[in-house]
Length: 330
Image (cartoon, rainbow, N blue to C red; front, side, top):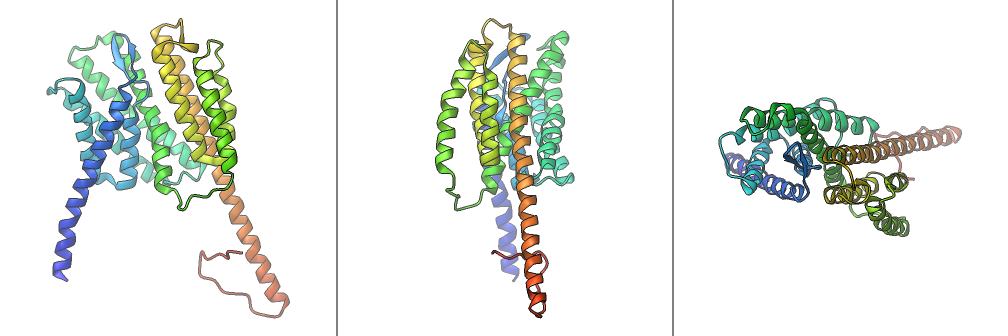
């Protein structure tokens, strides 16, 4: 027994180390993807979407707080890939690590479920995980730039807003997708696959048109989001939101379509307003639909159990006994 306990004690640090390294690799990859598209706000370069923040929050929720060194290491690797590492980057590393850790702590304390099966879960992810927790990384990062003289004090708020929204968008778009993959049931159901193919084809045709057309028809995306959420819930709506967000970011950074002939600040405001409203619509609508479906199933199970009890009472038999939480499969 002592040998088994000793082996388990040795395995746990090794597993945590491997998990932290995997988180660092995923964070670095997501960070490099985010750096592929950038906006210039008040002479500072910011990313409209920072997917690494979404990876960090999802990793902490799934694997636990013990993998936080992986987030710090991933942040360091991203910074090292674009600039020389100096002592002042420690503040950025601290902010980018502390923000998702605080998001995880707040979500857990509030009773957040990884399945995002309730409207409450969607609201918690939006207001605690994204909007509130990402204040830490944005204030730390932009405050460090001002403190070191790399950013004028007058430019603090525009750059801070762009930084904060970019981090929050990463949580709103990437975290639900990763949680969905983690909680996905296997084998995958193949019902409505024809409808899924039709929706995918229409989305791939309509989204590039709406994000690159000069007619400013971005609103055409919302019927697709509603369709995806109603029929395919979180998986459909968030995949549609991800594709739309990526193509809208490409159009904004290229200054084409509805983002042409706008100033840099106007491009940033229009892009972030569109991405934010779209992600909120997809996440909250799918959460509401999932919650209603789960409630309907619970009511149906209760009705089935009531019918069985009445049948046994009518026949003069004692009603069947079930363990707490047990339901019939009929």
